[in-house]
Length: 422
Ligand code: HAM
Image (tube, rainbow, N blue to C red; front, side):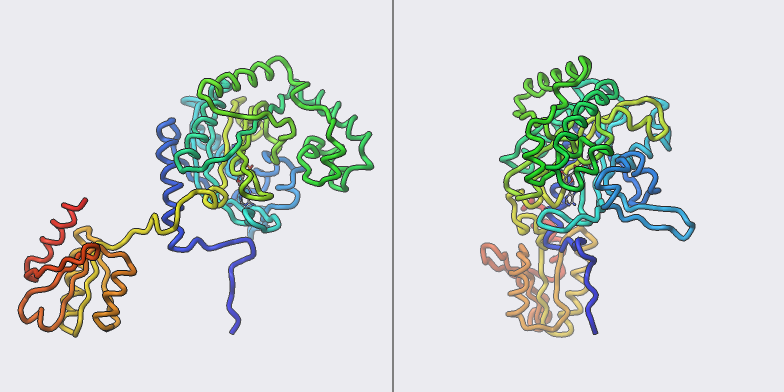
């Protein structure tokens, strides 16, 4: 019979890999908690309208990449392509702003985008996502960037570049958009079909087109930074001042427009040269109009998301570094010994000892091999003779030292030994 495989672009995270995953997630939880962020868990499915209204109808994500279904109740629902919109929806739905508009939240979990799968790009991928809602101060933007760079340092990711830009606000963006559209009209014939279409619908996205001809055609396009209003300018200057205080290196990338429409003022990305085409390991920015656009009060916000698969391909750890090896392996030979092993093994587990055994009736040699392979700290050998004499041999797998223990005392002795070693 044919084997049913996973859906294209969706992948399993195998047992040998989950140690690494837990490590990057736990490190994020620890650092974020130091900075005052609290975890929120939001659903994976949302009403399609939520993403259309927040990310923008004319973005690639909404136009081409969402997994959208008509539910049995005749309502369109979508597998979340990102978490920001869901977090803001939850912030509003639970009136989190009523006591205090400031909410510092993070979430970790899978996102879904129907992009063309390639190295570093999946259809189900995972993000570590941070949102700081309620404050307009550029110190907040600097603080989350500091938290992000600190996190990358802690998980030993080096050789990355922080790129920043400002996209202006509702005061200055319309003027910039007009100037950009005018420029793009003059270059229409040099642009790809997608970009030509975007001139009137979403001209800023053209700045992010990866096609060679388009990059060349827009080389001299007007830059947002030349058009930002004094308020946005000051905000951006202060952000840079605060980044400098903490010695966080950055470059200004005037081409960075991001793929989601809700951004205002500061946007940023962490990029690396080690990942080929999919070079962004994190991205984010300010979204001062989003809470209002989703039906809430006029509350600003800023945040970012890290791509877990991309950071995992960069961390300098091996799967084995996170192997949780058993404390003890019980190698039992013969029915009576196996019965005793079953009892000892589970009684020790109930006392918090990690124990493995083998119920397959294998030879002592092959059970010792298994203990070695699992990197167990001790092996207890139980055979007919040992049972008769009520003793068992305990072998320290690292030093090779063996000792005889009376079976009745064994449980307490092994618990004590393990405590001494800790
Ligand atoms: P984004 O730039 O679309 O931003 O995604 C953030 C990160 O998710 C990317 O830098 C990348 O590492 C990872 N990523 C995106 N798509 C894929 C994919 N198909 N496969 C693997 N990794 C991927 C956002 O999602 C915003 N919600 C971030 C944000 C939060 N802005 C403000 N708050």
